[in-house]
Image 1 (cartoon, rainbow, N blue to C red):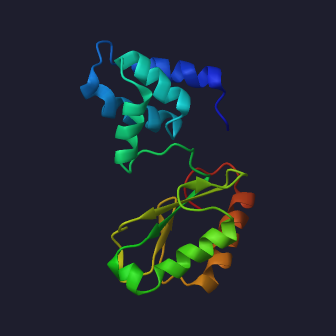
Image 2 (image 1 turned 90 degrees about the vertical axis):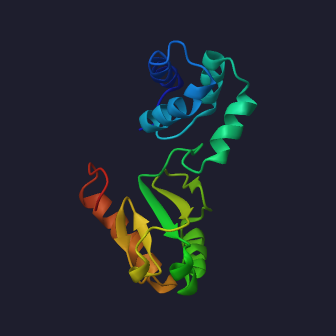
Length: 170
């Protein structure tokens, strides 16, 4: 459900009150708290944090873009991570990523227009024995090939239709 800008501003303000005398050293914890609450760092959040900490937005963006834990778009209902670690690379994760991009019509760090899917490239998921591997909302799919992508995506969509109120797993 989209967050209205008014309620988003209020939620950000609530988080900022936890850092009443916030200085530059509070920046990363503040950004982490906001992302945990909203799911991403909005432009509005960056501006509000800047006013609160008396820092320019450019400095906040500089810090947030340096760390790959921060994102500037909300994640999709189904967040897909594609492992590009050595084992996955050797076993074909590049073509798996390319196929996902074509199938979903989005690139890395993007969310589909319908808000259903987001795509992220990660350095290593830690499941090298399953290479190449993808994770959808924390559930691993191993031995993924380009041919398996449509079936995996269709299974996700089908499960969502059966249980539209589910949170993370399908």
